[in-house]
Image (cartoon, rainbow, N blue to C red; front, top):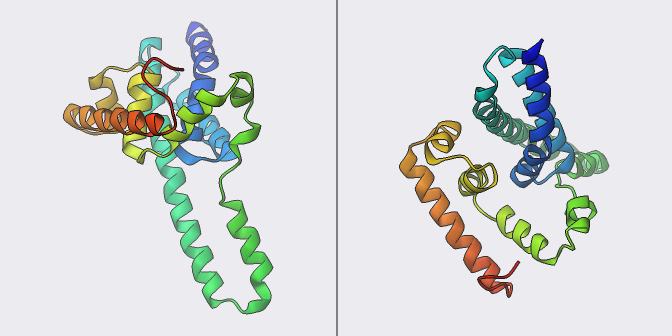
Length: 189
């Protein structure tokens, strides 16, 4: 079936970019892998019959919703870990440490992209992107990483085109300041 082949080709092309986008969003490599896999499964299960031209927009919307779902689950999980920790006696301290350790972000130092890219400038840029507020980071990555236009980005983010422009402008300004503070001037990297 041609639709299945087109979907498989699209997923193969978008996999790495989606993973980096998810890592930037959740700051946890394992969670990012799960998020991308879930988003790909949802696209394949629910939208495989759609025209291939619609896959990028559908996938980005699904990916962003899956990232938001991750944060909602983390918020609930963290609430219950905190509540149980407060109620539990001192004998359960080791279990609490294990539960909290699970929610900590994975280390970026083992990421092959950082190693292969002869990493100083790339690492500085990635660190600056990670520090952006979530909506600014999302708008920036969709516009400049995924190369979506303003209307597409607004649709994926579920906001107005003006909001996209504002988020992108603030993100670019914050990145410029952060990178300049780290010694990167215009024209470097």
